[in-house]
Image (cartoon, rainbow, N blue to C red; front, side, top):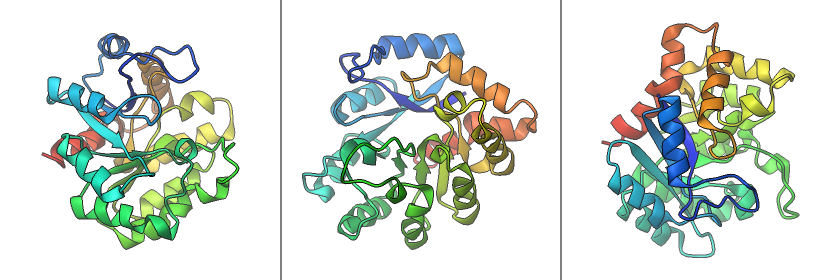
Length: 256
């Protein structure tokens, strides 16, 4: 099984929460949940790209890493440095970083990612307190112009697009390079109509969905339990694609 959405930090701290984001905690949880591989993320403000790259280098084959961009600096240089570190792609967190990467001024970002064939994971949750951002700017359909312009670029929307799961569903169905992970959302939306939408998404577009936990926000064991509960009625082949096949093809096989 592959966890395609893991946050880990050099000092174990996770912003102002009490969550333990240390590598030791991650290692323990992966072992307990029998999750063999993970995509580890460099979250801006929490850790460094160099730390994530060091784990990828130390545990080749076990981890793939995504770096973050400092948007106050030269974007091309930032992407070059991420690639030179041996990281597989980029994580963008619009809410945290205060950016709407669909604006025209970020066209170079998409051009460079496409030219380098570097997957991009974009946050897809919408508690937006930043006065300079609107929820509507960050919804799944906001990325349609970019994925249409760069159909060969792999774009993964995190958290299945939160409450807009059905928009995510149609984005996955309509665009060959558009994927989503189901980290965090099964736990958060359990008991709501969105939870049923998540099951529908997994059933109908299982070849475009990746399992993820959002560690340390959600423990890997809890995420795995929620995943098997959510996918219990699905075809075994679809469940296996979500559990490991899709992530393997994108980050291990696709980038080898």
